[in-house]
Picture (tube, helix red, strand yellow):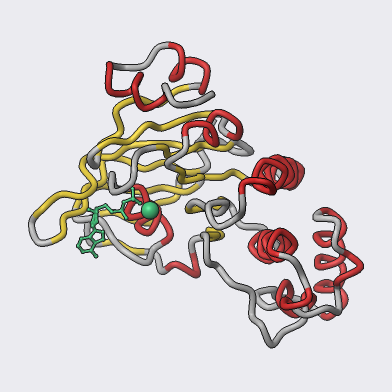
Length: 240
Ligand code: ADP
Ligand code: MG
């Protein structure tokens, strides 16, 4: 099967210093791959390169087998079919929930209405369709942000620590709910996190990153039970 996303040997240097080194990883259709590693290891840089807001010095990226980045070749972000969510990805405060979700949608008013209704139903917030962001709780705003990101049916959703701004009490519930909505939509996901526990909870596949490099990629069970070395084992050891 052709991977939904395939990153091959990308390297990114800042001022001559490699921050991402020969990174390769893949995400299969309908699956969640977690890019997991400690703070500062190069996760966000990798994600930004895939999203198209940064570019690699070397390497190639394909979505559904189609090249989007290669030496001397660059498809602009809005033409990649990628969705993006990160911690402080705020809703537009002056737009209603409906307009926030419909914002990036093409099509007739009826088509937009149908899609917004479908998504709000999935995230359980149909009753807030005419509300404004400030009338919603943090968790509810997060669900609207998810609906907005999913609305144009992205080929792959790129998520950079989207749960880290939520308080502990809410986080597990929102993770589970987000995962079930993503699975229901059949969206492939690359989820960046520094928390092994989150990766174990959400991933079909974990790509373990350290100092700019992927050191292991595999099923969560295997990465957890057969860590590549002591450092990887120690990184996982603080899961309760
Ligand atoms: P992570 O998301 O894993 O915490 P980042 O990708 O944000 O890591 O950053 C990796 C390293 O690259 C850090 O040391 C960071 O300071 C550095 N870095 C990121 N962006 C830039 C930039 N635009 N210029 C110089 N250094 C950068
Ligand atoms: Mg980061």
